[in-house]
Length: 192
Image (cartoon, rainbow, N blue to C red; front, side):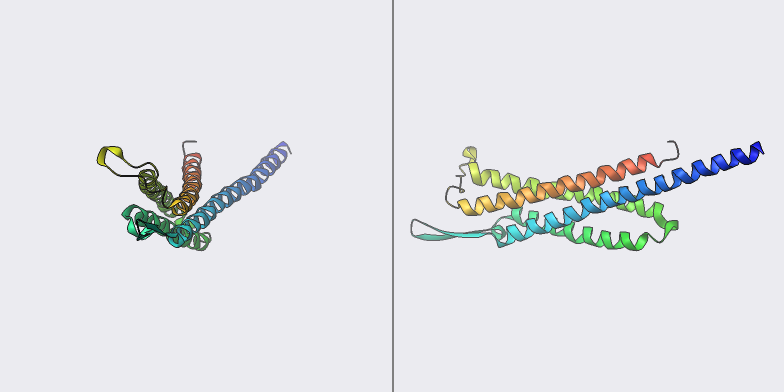
């Protein structure tokens, strides 16, 4: 009789923790997916803002046009955000399809964590390149004789700043995804 009581207590304990673990698992993936979707939307918005940004000014009766395409750093910034947007969207689709296949999840999680790290690094590289050229545009570089240009194309520089800020927030979202993935990997290791 005591054995039956003990086994029912074990069963009730395991059944009460199982839904809790499932809820934590679901909450983890919802948080990860939310951050990933946020990063996709912010990166896409950053691309749109940067690509549509243009300003034409007259200096000494000469017409100058400012556009992202004239700077290799801004082109890299747009390309990095484009790659992150496209691959993250693809990852979301694959992730939805892979939820049904429990047997391949371990391999998939490794690929997913690697993907998240690469996307995080790519985003910060694009942000760093655009920030560097934006800094030179804003303040110039006296040592090599480069003059600031943002006092002539203020609208262009301000709009680029908005694009950069969107991309930096996307980077923070992806950093959050990466940290969550690493935490989940450590928490689910057999030693813990």
